Length: 357
Image (cartoon, rainbow, N blue to C red; front, side, top):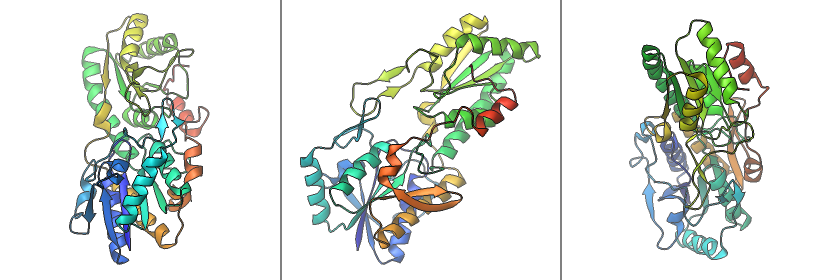
């Protein structure tokens, strides 16, 4: 049997661990794996792929990024604008299917977020055997409790806050760190709590710059001469829209710039020297944590097991410390958002963290 594998959407630590898990598990079944280069684009004529085996994937779990390449743009973008679903043109689907059949690919594993999985669902609806593997650095798919890449991104935020703390205290500044989080503030919440931020601003809790300035005043009254603020790229003040950096290239809009806005407004309201730093792609790059290596490997192995069981149209899912599966349709229907009244937010408030509300 020959199976196919592709990565879609943005890269993140742990993708190579998934590839490793797929290749090793398939090899033990006596199957061959081919990896399509640059996501769904690799399915088009002439098909761009490489044969994967245990030798070619030896030691790749520790590598960031993906040896197969990926793209979050292109002709197979399943999401557009603010997350609306885009129907993939029939001629593209037919061309991809013909190439898969000509290569004797009997099942396709698609690794990606809601956009990639939305496209995978369309392949499944066309009758092609598909398995989904969730990959979203924002950890925003409700059908799985955790996705690989999130832990590594959170650790990057913690490391950045550790460094910003020393320079902020030296200059008695307010330091603002903008992190990823389009609709869900998990990276900001976990990273801010782990890194000792005093203020965390996330998309799920509309905030007020005046309230943020008041929180800084309270901190100073307690004897704190510097403040660390973590803000998700999708956060916005109450009554205002998210800041869009780019919406011209197709696919989902690119957010960014809220950190600079926050620095300007907070600086004026608080009367304190304020600086902003945007982590950007630093959160995506670098060596994955041990957790992301293990989870990625488990996801890859489970994807192969689902093929063996002929459970197509399913997505690998991590729940209650076990790796199982759910329908792809269920996976893309609902985002996993931070509950403003949930335990994580309550924990943060209990240790004095302000959400600017």
